[in-house]
Length: 292
Picture (cartoon, one colour):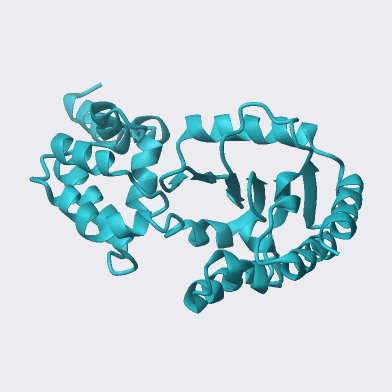
């Protein structure tokens, strides 16, 4: 075989095709765009993301440095979690923010933490399942106008805002959330607004029960270690977020450890609560014995 023939064969030999499926790493997902003008919390989240990306850190890497979970940092960036002041202070240190996050928190978010549910209606309206335990009062989505007005000392702006939140239970598109509400029995006996208001409120609880809404009563003395009310919201992608009431303020959290603890607590409480039919009988009996 001549050299010219060898050169021809070599030049025309099929080249091996690279296995792109093996060699190419998957393209990283682009983060969802943020709208800093949407709310003070959205502005805070946008600045947090800017500082983190400037530092060349992923959410998990930043979380490791600051002793927070990456999922919590992501939720704050997306304006889904309300951060505490110590979070802003710590992230400023880790991301070399020169105090910008702390100034934003003090200037914009401090007033939003109290009243506590500044960002909660966003999660509430996106939920397809709500699980609520109330230790002292009727859950906000099930309050009558008169009951809410008495609690809010006649502040009509706040009353309108609370009633507007209740519209998610009557919406048609998307479907309203399933609501599982457990009330401590003391709620039935704690006077708010007078006998007429209480009678109307308890009758409303009975009427509200449906295929999508359940109300159960936890008899007094049956709960253990329950020191406050809380709500768990599950959205359609199975992500969860919780709102927890404390003596000082309410906290919205998406921390996995918090969610796991609250889920166990809710199931423990519900396991001790009366079934729905017995709960409705107790509510009706309380109306007759206490508020008529």
